[in-house]
View 1 (cartoon, one colour):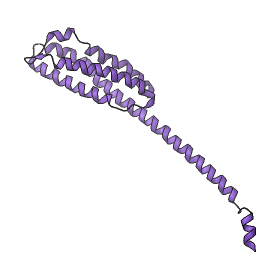
View 2: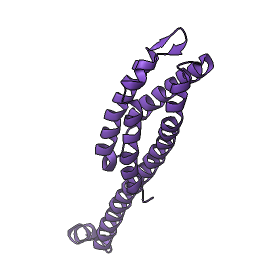
View 3: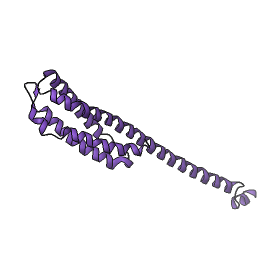
View 4: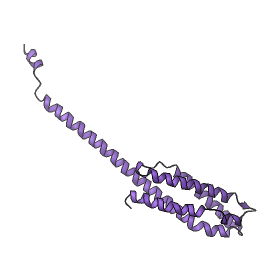
Length: 165
């Protein structure tokens, strides 16, 4: 019978089919690994962009808030504007702290989170020192708010280097 001899010998092309499957499997693994690399790169670029946006906001705050704080001591409208600016910066700092950083930026992000904690606490101090609609002048002598915001700049500059900027 013919069936006995067919079972005992390999089908023609069987070895080639195995080789083809191995090559296809290896190619898929490389392709999937490449996708992971591309996703990591895209995550890093997205994070760098978000960090850059945050830096712009923090820089604007650091530039605008000190003069506005001086005015808020004797000007109700400036005091209201300062309260709004402080609340917006507080929300922005808290939101940036919640961002999931890529592994390559995790340590730098943690440094920003720590600085943001100081910033949020200092903003709370400011917000609690308005009396009769005006800012208490004593707060201007006892705060590190604006220095803490400036400290973020150097950290974010390091993050920008991760993105190749």
